[in-house]
Length: 346
Image (tube, rainbow, N blue to C red; front, side, top):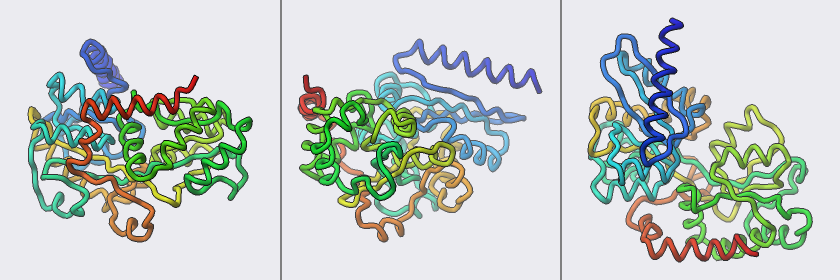
């Protein structure tokens, strides 16, 4: 048993070394070894191991003999691995809907259809190539050290007003994504800009207050909870809810004007080798709403059309060519230039 754990750790280390030698950067990696091993399912994913671990173990329990090689990367790194380098994985899971859509649109994804996938709402899949299994809001989180209960802003206009009126209180104490580094951050920022003119006013106010830029939601959540930040904007709500179970000191706010809801998706790359088990995992994820134990364990909200009907402020980001607009190189350069002019004021 001890030898097995050492061997598993060695395999993970060798994979990390191999990944670092490639053009894409690996953040974490783990091999879930089956005994006996009948097949290996290779997954590249942007979901943190500590979040996705219960799902992987549950799938393995349901599918005896399937080892899982799970590699964690950033959203842009996943795109680089599949699109630029042709790295071989059986399944790709990402929170960057626009990048996943581009992979499908440009011929890097296989089609698949089953009873499980067709049970998804029409807005939760695309062309039998992209399959959403979670609906995760982009939220505002505020520190208990700066806000007493019921005093935090509830919409973007209130947030802008608060920041303008109290610059000395919030200078250097605001966090948001560095959209140049984060695919998810870029996605929700571009969606914000399409939904409301308030986005650019908010960015300008944050820029004047020396907003701190982050690659990841987890880092923002940590700094808000500790009181280093007063608030963080566009944090991934599922991660915030998951951390709240063990970390105190912050509140989650779904803004009442609108909430962008990201759909985490899975796809089967065109060059996948273990297609059969990749399809099994697609089915497993498509039926996640039937496993409330896993929803609770991971903090990942499963696809649920009813919840969107009950809260009209929730706006799922829609699949389709519209998601590709801001991936156009000229559009992207223009957006990033405007974003830098707003956030990186001298």
